[in-house]
Length: 274
Image (spheres, rainbow, N blue to C red):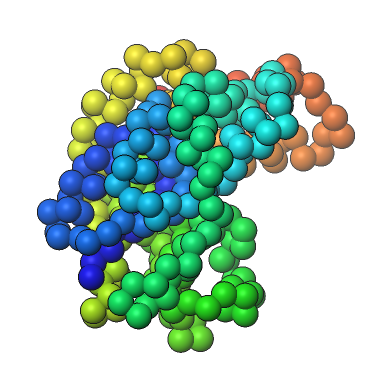
C-alpha cells in the first residue's frame, strides 16, 4: 500500500490540487493529512472541502486550533496586526468549514498492513529533541510517527521507530519546492515528492493580490509570496525581529506594536525587494 502524506497546506488550494493529482498518478491508495490546512491564504473553505472529500484521515493543526479558540471563546479582534490574518480566516469560514474543524481529532492512530501509524501535527510535542520522542513512545503504541508543523522534511529512526515529516505544500521554507511524502507499507520506505514553487506562481500571486485577504493584510501576504518564491521562512524572520524589539517592553498598545510592525516590514521589504 502507498499512502500520500500531506501537511501544512495553509490554504494553498492551487498546489494542494497539484499534489493530490501527482500522488494519484503515482497510484497511492490513501491519504493522510497532518493539519494546518487553513490560514495564511485565500482558499480556506476550498481546501477544507478538498481535504475532507479526499480522505477521512485528517487531524488538527495549530492553525485550526487558533480558529477554534477564537470561536469558542468569542474573542474579538484586538487591533494588533499580527492577529488580523487569523480573524480574516475566522470571519470568512463557512458554517460547513467551521463544523469540519470543530470535529477533527488532535491525533490519530491508524493501522495499515500491520504498520501502526501515529498522526500528529507536531506543535505539541515539538519533536525537537529525543525527550519528545521518548514521551510519544511511552504514551502511544506505534511504528511510524508522521508529523508536520515545522515545514521541514525529516526522516529519523529512533528506538526502532520512524519519525517522518513531509515538509509543506503550502509555504515551503527549506527549499524552493513544495513537498509531500509517500509511505510504502511494503518496503517501509518514505519518499519525498517535490513540486517546484515556480509552478503556477503567477496564478498564486494574482489570487492573493486580488483578494480581500490582501486588502486587509498586504504586508503579511507579500511576505508569504516572497517566502514561497524563494523557499524561505520570511514570515518567521519578520516575527522574530518584532519579538526582539518588544521583549524588553513591559506593556505596549496596538498602535505601538503596529508601528514596530510597519518599521520592520520596511526593513524586510528593502532586503527582499518586495
